[in-house]
Image (cartoon, rainbow, N blue to C red; front, side, top):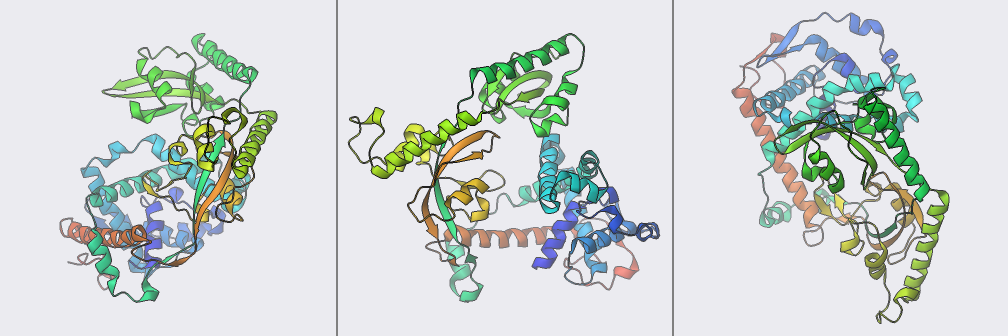
Length: 482
């Protein structure tokens, strides 16, 4: 698939249900003249299975694409309805395979927040986004909901279709064996980074303050003054669940923090509020909604203790001392006499780092894909957390950064130092050095070909009717015209 068409397909994916209010765009509604939509005379121009594609669907997509700078490969009059039709094929199969049961409101809410954060970055602030769209954030979220749900369904359906595809090393070598050098993928500069993190100590007074807040919420709920859901919307610091009254969809025990899971799965009375639970994210109170087999549906309120500046400074100073000891090769005072080898960064990771994700791997950060699967230990700079990228950007290999603060993936303030373990300059990929990169290229080609063939086969077995005006189109997929 050519890049312009691929981008267009992704754009269509965001608009797959094709409701005008569901279009994900940074553009203000006033950017398109009101009469440009009002003048559309509607009619059914395609039918895929039992799903119609309206002329207005196509025109709305065309207008949005024009405002967002999408360029179509080929004639837009043909490419737009075809891409809408392809999305409907995937959605139809997703319904047959009950993929919708795997999509939770939590999944949709998280996706919406990621899209909103991206749009906020583009325009500068949430207030500017609301002004630009002439909608409140709540209205924007609502308008995006159904389209992003469909997009998640399509994504999961594609994943299911290609999940059993494999590529052997021999196939990778064979694919690139006679390829011209300028066609071999270029690998941008990558880095490998080790990290030590310390979590600043939260004062007992601050913990008691948070617990008192949660006790107050419990008393208000138990007295009938207000509901759990209302307080969750007002006060919970879990941004995804708070907007849904604290609700988390049906999940198994392994999905939750162990302490949270223990309490959640022991709840039996939906009218009761749990005791206060401490997890790696903060402090919670939980209320049971329902149990279904080995899954539980609950609502919760999360409150996070505030880390004081003095506690952060103590952690930063501690890291400063640790780095000084590493540079001198001398163990810190409590360990002197016990360790005879030269004190290293890796030693300090084992003894001091609070980062459980890297502590058992000598502090080496792991690059994972969007599904949480390990890719490698190499990162392009933009893939690193912003604070880490800034810390290692000017380091030479082997150097350690100055201490810095950051927000970890659990939303907690931590202090850290980073060591640049390796920097691999941009280069043409080779099988010996970049096998995974080349394997990914071959695998992506195989997935693309498989999905193309699947769509062609699906077209043959699906009722399709299109207006005569489209019969002379040069489509990407054969079989539409019969």
